[in-house]
Length: 121
Image (cartoon, rainbow, N blue to C red; front, side):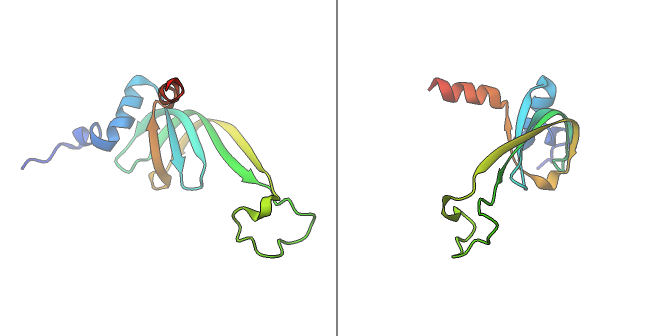
């Protein structure tokens, strides 16, 4: 059995999504561990899934507490909270970003095309 060379390793399989994104200068959507989403262009990557991203839009949701200065009596468990707090979608633009690979959960290649096919069906 022959082992593939390291350059072939980073072009096929799961790394194929990143390879295609670098070659085509297309966007990817990256879910990271802090529940933020990153939409940007991959300029480089390595076998640890470290990513060099450009033109990144970082998106996340913040939940306001929603009480009038009192603690959450009754213990809602944190999820739901009885419908009192509201969710606020936030985002920011980052020109260049190095993302350490251990924080990557999921990478979706060409999310614009994926959204177009979803809305067409």
